[in-house]
Length: 244
Image (cartoon, rainbow, N blue to C red; front, side):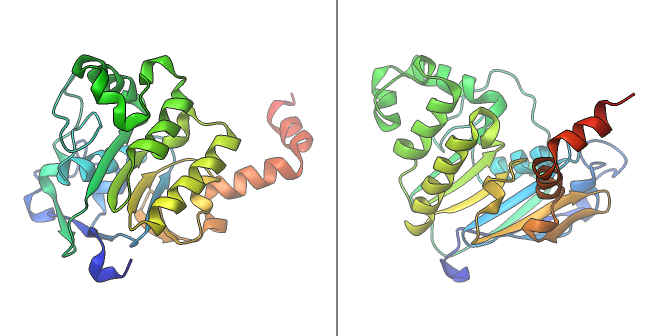
């Protein structure tokens, strides 16, 4: 997609409205130093250590884009527990001239709640998910059904740690589906720890560092480097970690 046709072009923190950068969620490194984040027309990855703020930021982006805080499509408005922050109220998203025909917010930690909401809506709600209850599938199978059946292209998809339920082989299959959807005019914003997913070539990676979000190359991410070092010599790494 050309930049002008991108669904979400950029996101800015309205810093002048922030009440206090010393309190959550504004104290998180990914938020505290945030100014403007420009999205890739196809895939944007936000990566970082646990507690760096990437999932909090992604959740706020999704809510600012109009998605339900617990996940689902734009028509989902259920809530089981109000756990999301008010960060979305301080974000300004710049959008392209096109409107997405489809969209979805996936939160790995609350996908069970989405599946339960679909159960409540009745059997017809599963038609676009392949016709089978998500609760009757493993977490990984349910997510692949989402990618394969529910995501229809020309959509804006926000995914928080989608690899949580996927084996390495299924992560490769997810990459294929993401590429298929990108070629069908879709845009993805993904928070992930997976060095497999973040290897997608036509993408932009932002790392959550103590000094804030910084654009980085795939080979320079800690996820890639740690995984590569371990696989090159697992025995030496284990001896170093587990030795007396």
